[in-house]
Image 1 (cartoon, rainbow, N blue to C red):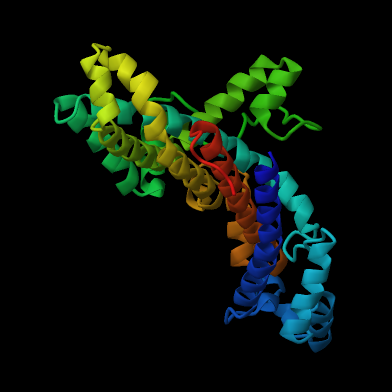
Image 2 (cartoon, rainbow, N blue to C red):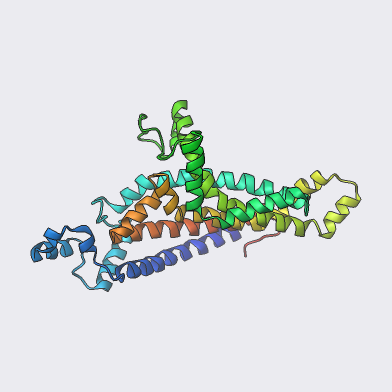
Amino acid sequence: MRNMARFLLRRLVFVCFLVIGISFLVFMISHLVPSDPIASNMSPHAMSDPEAVAAYRARWGLDKPLMQQYFIYLGNLLRGDLGISIRTGNPVLSDLKQFFPATLELSIVAMIIAIIFGITFGVLSAVYRNKPLDYAVRTISISGVSIPNFWFALVMLLLFYSKWHLFPGGGRINSRMTAPTGGTGLYVLDGLLKGDWALVNDALSHLILPAIVLGFFTMGLISRQTRSNLLEVTSLDYIRTAKAKGLSRGRIIMRHALGNALIPVITVMGMGFSNLLGGMVFVEKIFSWPGIGQYAYLSATTLDFPAICGVSLLIALINVILNLLIDILYGVIDPRVRYS
């Protein structure tokens, strides 16, 4: 326990310096873009008024030197203030609290789909190596990591929404339903907590298509990694000894081989989840999903510097937390791992 506490303390100190470094890079890069946020957010008529332009620059601190702007931003950041969004006029922290639950809910469902099918396909592919089932599973896995998600999203909409009418086309819930308020922001969980099964069913039906699209890529990665690791583990001496003792193939795979094979897969899962949270701009746009992806897209097109920095810091912090959880899971799954 003492080693674990020391390890966590070191990582927390590292997180603080990392967040400061990321804030500096994101702030500088976003402000060095050769575009003018004033032109993106003010009308041509207002732009012709020098006093209005000067007042706008003063309001958002754009009249100060760049380094001075950053130190003001950093001081506010250390107090938990991410600034005011130029586009919405709301605190960036409030905007993130509003949009992040939608992205988190979609990412969780997509990750569940990716893990279930990825591990299942990987095990089947390894067990039936070089057989028709193996070739079929490997084709699906390669397709998952090769097909662009925006193209796959359009195909899924065309088939399951437009042609077969099996799932709704976009949004989080039906427009005739009232969105839950005062809960977690995760509509399925809020519906379960309130016993509102109509909300649960409707929210799940809207989640299925975008979650499959997002999870398809990560599923392919998990499947390929699981197959590769399982084939390597099953060639080790202790597995051959288990076979010589007459243990069934299923017991050998599930009781002796799969646990060791999944240790590197955990890293892929963590990376996949962070990619889901940070790389769903196209999918959210296509499915009209009101999440962080849409918010980041609109912020970038309007050069909303505080919002861009806020989204970047949120994604970076999530990545750091995920890496920490992965390191801890290594110690839980593999007793040989120790933190010194």
